[in-house]
Image 1 (cartoon, helix red, strand yellow):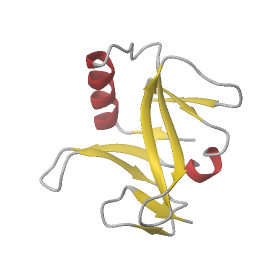
Image 2 (cartoon, helix red, strand yellow):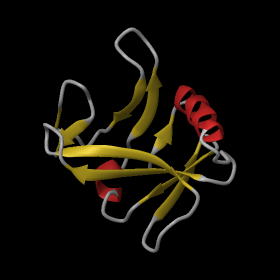
Image 3 (tube, helix red, strand yellow):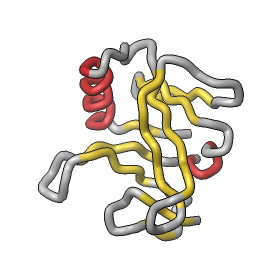
Image 4 (cartoon, one colour):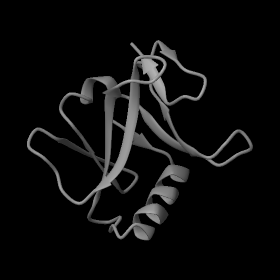
Length: 109
C-alpha cells in the first residue's frame, strides 16, 4: 500500500523517539484532507492507537495506519525523506496524483 524509503524510516524512528513514541509499537498516521493549492493535502502524524475503520500496513519496519477514506488516494505511494538543499521534509511520491503543487504538499486526482 504505502512504501517507506530507508531515509524516511531513519527519520521517522528518530522523530518518534524524540516525541515520546515507540517506533516498534506505535504508528505513523498518514491521511489526505481537503485543502492546499491543488485541492487535497497530505497529513502525517504519530499515533499510539488505531480507530475503527483504519487500515494498517507495515513496510521497512514502519507501522502505518491510514483512515478508510484516504486509502484509495494513497495506494502505491512511496514516503521518502529529503534533507537536501531544496529543503527538508517528508515527500509523498504518489502515482495517483495527476497534478501537484510546487511545494509537493498538495495534489489533485
